[in-house]
Image (cartoon, rainbow, N blue to C red):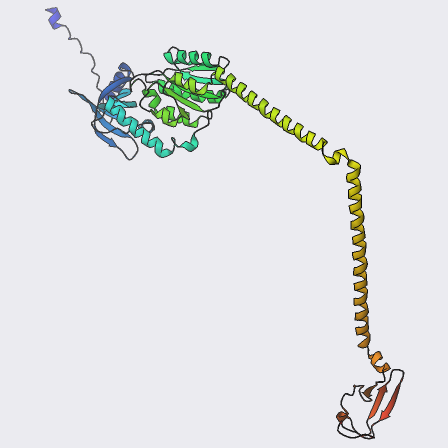
Length: 416
């Protein structure tokens, strides 16, 4: 009874959350409980926002989840997602606080089925081709006799064993440098691209072989990734793509400077057979010796011909003939010179006589005289211009006289 009359115990104080608080709490719990995971499903309601972010729903037969892939992530996609495409996506489950919805934040995306892979492969191929990554003008020449070969492949696969076997058989002195990578799986493409860049930074190799053994399209997919294609394209070292598929060409085959169907075939292409090379050297040496021998024989015959020639057998006779010829030429030159001088003398004398005949003194010497007006010393050429009592100066061969006009006659008048 006393217990009934005692004071009732107080209920614990209730905690009241705001909507934002409980949403943030759920967000933290959910994100901490579920790490980064891979999901597989079919795309629907695909939308690309003007901001560059993409939004879509990933679904299977029973459920669906909203997905977002931010612009910084989807810029690196090598294919164009679209409704109905089956994909695999890696990301984190998170909560969009404004609406209280949980969603999947996609970090990485790749096609899931073979059809989707083929579609993605074709999309990337067309995109890189349009950029010019496949153009022949960018292809680098493969060295004929490489001393060091860089290899990008798995350290445990059949590819490296085949490569080493072929090189040891064909030319054992060639040095092989392996940069080991994974050739399959989500991280493989990044490792392959990084290995190519590392070889370029290292620099001390003549050619790169990038490849792996055969497999399905999914197994070989790392060599179809855009990151690998761009690493091959920017490589300063020539690259041979050696992915083990005999029939189809992959992205790396189109970008590389040379394509080999298998890693062992790449080794056959880039490493010359030592025995064949020795035979070639022997052939060239024999050919060179033959040419040298032929040249020596030809010069020997020429020397013998000259040694037996008249000029070398009777050199004094040849010299005398040239001396006689020189005398004849000197005589002809002297005669020609004398003749030219005589002609020039005659021409000078003729010109002298012509000049002398034109000299006014010569004319006066022959009895002629020149009349001038006393007033202005003008030469008188026509008697009709004279006036009675006009004063004149008369110039003779020797001396002169003054006169006065007393009478004027014309050519028709008779002068006694």
